[in-house]
Amino acid sequence: METAPRSEPLLRPERDVYTVARLNREAHGLLERSFGMLWVEAEISNLSRPASGHWYFTLKDAQAQVRCCMFRTRNSLLSFAARDGQKVLVRARLGLYQPKGEFQLIVEHMEDAGLGALKRQFEELAARLAAEGLFAPERKRALPALPKRIGLITSPTGAALRDILNVLRRRFSAARVLIYPASVQGSLAAAELIGALRLAARHGECDVLILARGGGSLEDLWPFNDERLARAIAASPIPVVSGVGHEIDVTIADFAADVRAPTPSAAAELVVPDAADWLESCARAEARLMRAMRRRLGEVRERLRWLEGRAQLASPVSRLFEQSQRLDEHEQRLERALRRRLAAAGERLRWLSGRAALVSPSIRLARRALELEALEQRLGRALRHQQPARAGALPERERRLWQASPIARLRAASARQATLTTRLEAAAGQRVQRARERLLPLVRTLQAVSPLATLERGYAIVRTPEGRIVRDPASVPPGGLIEARLERGTLKARVERS
Image (cartoon, rainbow, N blue to C red; front, side, top):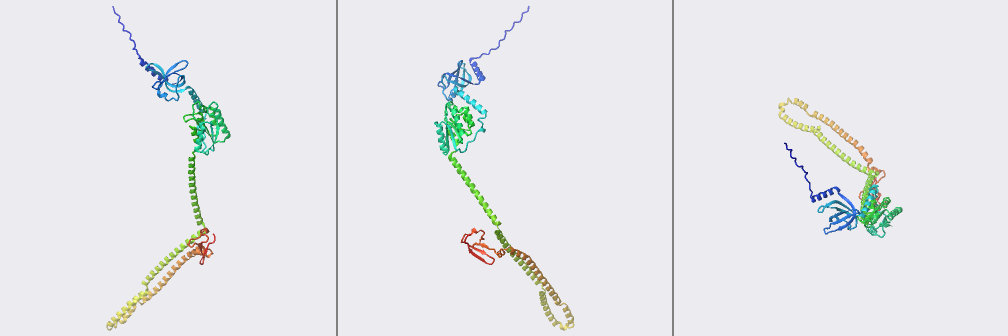
């Protein structure tokens, strides 16, 4: 008999058991990851402010409620004090208070629900008008540098009007102001502001308009967020400067205006220049203009002197005196050249005369005559000693002596000297004649253009006693002495009038 095997017991899955802390921790993380940041609108109740500074309260509506916490670092940033029963709009993240496992909202930001609706309306209107191009930078107009008249659209009893007038009086007291009174708060304010804008545009008396009011709450400034007012500002033919509220206040009118100023006083500073800066700028411009004028006058004066110099150079009298001076210079150079040529010719002639003297037949004949006389004396003495022995040979030697006599040679040398002297005198005469022929045309040209020839035609050269040539009658005052050089002599005279 076989025994059946015994079956194994069934395996049970392992259990994942949560602790309460783990459950709350994971639920907390799941809530934060799933929802993120939320906007919730509800009414405050059970508001508690412990010493820690944190706020604990409940947000509720007609059907449910939720616990909330707002830490001190966040609630200290609010511009209002929350209270029970107040309807608010909060930005919060969803969480879980783990120690108690309580579901709650951690509030990061809180707004008054009424103000929140106005802000949403503001943002929607701004986005729509911007999409239409009403706020486009290219449609903005530049402000006039110096407006003749400034239009103020504001309340005649408000502090903004006094601030603007004080600034205009301080910065540019000559500015003229025209006030267009209008309400700046209340249900009728937008219509009155639009009417003032249209009135200013219709009259066209102003160069720039200031739309201004003092600071206030969002509800106080709401007329300046009116769509009709924004379109009236954009349609105005006169540039508009908005100065509404304080620096932190922004309205639709600021976007539509050509220039936005943070305050009414700042708007007044934008539309007029500072008188001191303006006067300083005028002084600098005047100084630059004077420097430019002096520089231009200097250039014109220099140009005039240059033209006067050109006129003097082009004047026939000036050219005549210049040519006269050049002729004098050429005459002096010609005289110096002639003197040098004549001196060189004289030196050459003396040198040739010396050479001729060295080779002159007369000198050579005189020298040979002396030698012959000495030889005759020696011959006489020799003959006296040898005459008896050589008496028979005397005729033959006398004949030979006469044959060797230099008389014939002296006669030939004398004839040759006469020929050379004649040729030398002819060559010197020819050289002198050629030099005279080259000199005569130059002399005739010099005489033709010489100032002396000009004087021969009846002209005169007038000089001051100092020797300066008079070219302009104005250069000699009445009563001054002058000297006129004529063809023959000079005249001295006194000027009676010029």
